Each structure stands twice: as C-alpha cells, then as structure tokens.
Image (cartoon, rainbow, N blue to C red; front, side):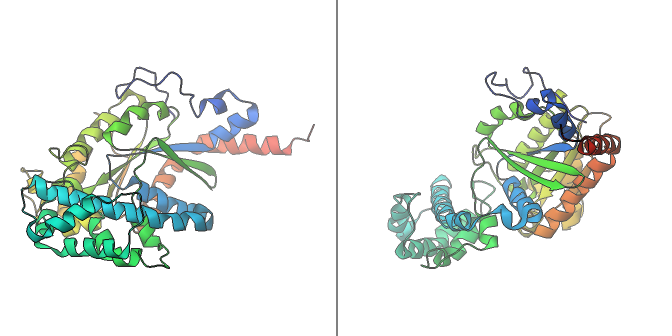
Length: 369
C-alpha cells in the first residue's frame, strides 16, 4: 500500500520547494494513472556504509544487464579506486594518531601519503609506499582495532590490490566496481521492468548529513528495504567515532519503522556483509555490542540474535515482512533476496495489479483517435 507523508514528519521538515517525484503521475492523464498502478517504488534505506550502493549495483547488473554500465563508466572507476585507496590509508594513519600508536620509521612515509591529493591518479611509487605502510606493524595494529577507530570495510581490498590499480592497462573488474566506494548523496534511482511491475528502487544517502533530505521521498512508497551492516557490531561510525555502527543502525531502523508515514508499509530487512561478519567473529563475538548475549558462538546463532534485536524495534502489532542474510558482493545473494521482496509485494497487491493490467489492456485496444 502506498503512503503519503505530510511536511511535519518526524525525521526532518520537507523542503517546500522540492517537487514530489510521484505527484505528476497521480494528477496526470488516465494513461499515467494506469501506469502508476503498475509502478512500485521501494525506498532503500540504511546507515552509512551498510552496503546499499552495492545492492543497487547488483540490481542494475541483474535486471539491466549490459545496459547498466557503459565502457566509459567502467574506466572511470579506476580513478574512484585510486581515491578510495588514498582516503582509506589516510584514515588508517589518523587511526594510529587517535590510538596513540607510534609510527616510528613509518612517520616519513605516512606524511608523504597525508600530503597526497586524493583526486590525483596514484603513481607506482605512491602505490609502493601505501603497500609498505599497510604491511607495517603500526598500521596493522590500528587496523586490528576497528572497534575503536573508523576503518572502511574495503580498506584491506584496496591495499592488497593497489599495485594492480596503478598498472598502465588497468581496467576495473566487476569485483573492483562492487568494492569501489562512491558515497551516496541525495537520491539515486534505479528503474527496471520485471513483469508485471515496473520497479523503482530509490537509494538515499545513509550518512547522518544526508538523512535530512529523506522525507521528500516518503510519498507513495510500496515498501521499505532496510540494509544493515552485520559487521558493524564491532565498528564505529565515519561521522562519530564514539558511536557503534550497529547501535546507530538499530536506532535508525526504529525511527523509520515507527514513522507515521510507514504505518501500513511493508518493511524488508537485508542483513548484509555476512562474509565480513563471519571474519570478525574470529576476533570478537557480538557480546562486545550486546553484553546480554550468552548464546552459541556460531555465525548463524549470532546473526539470528541480531535479527531479533531489529524485530523488536518494530511497532506493536506489526511484523517484519521478510529478512534475508546476504553478502551484497555476491550477485546470487542479492538476486534471491530481492526475488523474495518482489514475490511478497506482488502477492499482496494482486487485486491492484490485475486491475491495472485490465485497464492497460482496455486502453491499448482502443482505436487511435
């Protein structure tokens, strides 16, 4: 069921100058209203670095295929990966400072990297310097303390592939593109047909500074798809290194699920980065975030406990529609999980879909005037 949100919503006041992206369909001619009955908008929400953008990349690959990304766009990811790598190394160097870990003989190399322009291409000597820093004792020590300092989830991937990134004939692979990080600002919509419905997945920036813009997209939403970084249980925020990522995600999820705009809106949960989560459990179980946890130490038992924490944040008399455990870098995971979303929404909107298809058929059969 679609929803309409008034301007005095609980998250932030809507900008009155912003035109609603769906209202044109509501107020347009008959043809547009029929199309609207077969258009489903899904809001993709979550805290920063939950993996929403990776989910979107996979959806584009699954449903749009070769049309999803041009050769020029593929090549452009080389510079994105260079920027990601420089930023990640700078973050790790700052982490050493925050943790008061002496850099020792790495000090000169660290200063060299800190002075690099993040928008300039990396040279081979820059890559060699980053590789040397990454293997050093101080930076490895900082990296092992991700529960105390912010470190991007993909940092190790960048550092371990940096020499490949700077080769003259480097062309980003599919995995490189999935690992590349472009922080979502504003709204990014992916639209595709999967009959009988035309789907629009609206990805909204998850950083705190972006959430003030969310409310303008709360109109006419068929479902909320909330993405959580499972590995966030022992990590801190980019925006606030005193705040645990999982705690932030739980608070945001509760705010969204109880928002009056979404009283009747289905909520789907993607518990993402299960692969990274499993690696993290080798170092520390979830009791560091949930002291009350005294269950089994298996990956599944701990994922299910986290799932239960989110389920409890739902409003009274409303249940989560569906939950999937995924690694968004795995296309099969995203395909199966999103099929669950589609099947559920189609099943519960059959009457509306049949009506829309009937009207569309009647309209198509009319002679041209």
